[in-house]
Image 1 (tube, rainbow, N blue to C red):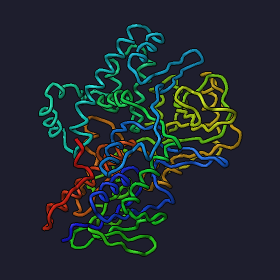
Image 2: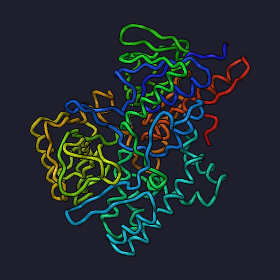
Image 3: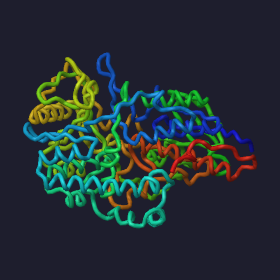
Image 4: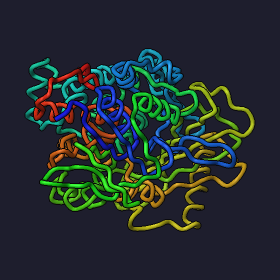
Length: 511
């Protein structure tokens, strides 16, 4: 067996790109097949007239993941992507008179919360920030950057590192319950409960460990010059410079299996690409549904498909914004959060939804826009894109509800033309067999994090990456999944190899 393996990666989202970079940096021959015309996966863009704007993720956190990825490939992130730290994380509103800004610095946010809701709530926020830091500290090096394990295995890892940290996790409490320990003001519970939606979950069912997202944001939220798509382009360029071959508009139809092992990929065109190993960086639900053949379908196991995470309805538009000055990131909360998630649980688009608005031409403080600007609006929706469709009248009513809610909070948005609307049906078309779920399986219950597939599948030679597998959804987490898949693949190849083992730079520097 030679030291240079041939690897096919299916999908060029964050997980697939990170995996390809690591494998190529270690000297392997990598081909990426992608059904779309460009890299990025969910980090896609939407056309509005003659302009484009991000239609997926809009912020970057945990930049250390990408600093390490580029460094291990012999490059520097800053020479490929221009990043600016955001001082103001997000602007929040409940009505014309209820506005609250959160900042990267705990002290500034505490002062703002104190002015908004009183000194007791400011003290509660400081305690909340400290707890989120403890949870993040307990999980970063034991869970996020390591292969998947169960609760017992995780407990052992944490105990070896720091026994008191084991008791900081509160695994059997929901995020909503834990927030009640820190905040009496329901608006603040609503604000920080929104972290559950970052994983496509309900704060009333998601585990308290998601409090760690607060600390992730305090470590830094970064704005990407050229929009988020610039990060995907930079990663693809880095991979190409390390001799990764990209095959765009090439859809994988079946994973080839011989003697019980993955041996390549058959494309819809009829072409077959032989490989020593295959990495599926598509949603695990597509694999489970048989999208890549019956042998591969059994590779992820599970008696039934997991509960899907949330989807969304989004509006990408060019518009004039008047009244409240929007920051780069803004949230306009519904008056009844539980009713909103009850609607979602019943398979309905919320009657009164919380609205996320990204003003993509503005900086973090709201400066930079003039005249018509690019706006991206999002509300949560059930992941039913493979079962139902919303007609034009329903979407028009929904758009009116959203714009009326913004106006009630002091922001008047007037589109200059017809917005580009994306529903769960369109997300299902982009990411088949998901129903439009944007975050893999729902993070509901204490065991949800342990039910995600790991990087090694049940089929030898087949590995998994992407936001639907361990360690979870989100831009940096999906990238970590790709690094874990590359590392596991190389370890497995080395353990069955007779050649002298060389450097495996792709992930060995990870904690």
